[in-house]
Image (tube, rainbow, N blue to C red; front, side, top):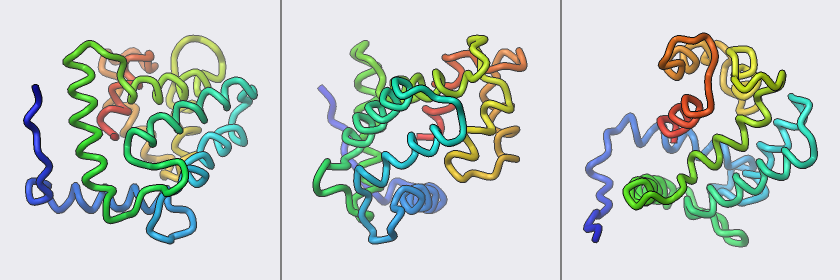
Length: 173
């Protein structure tokens, strides 16, 4: 029931630039191919930055595996840089279709796995310092945490609840 078609001409040049920059972040060996072992570096990096349990790290790793598989990263062959933009657009459309059908969101699954680790003090929320940890894990300047936090904290409570972090991940992806 969906007649959506991908057309690279429909994307703004800034969006293309951002998508390629994001790809380059994940392509750790700069071979223009994103491989699953490169992606799984990020949950391991979170382990280094927070006091994550083995169970939490494995939950993150599984969420990352599932998420990026659905973005087109094959377990053996990976995903070529030239296919990344289309893969992202197809994923976004598939995510909208999942939402329309009432199916679980893969973005929420990934966000929730990180949320459980970021909520370092166990209070059920993520504060700006905890969000800075995620920024550090992804090599994003920590100053960006304030901007991300301000945009994500839609109820102005001073802390991010789970749905707010999911919304932030949805905007990011």
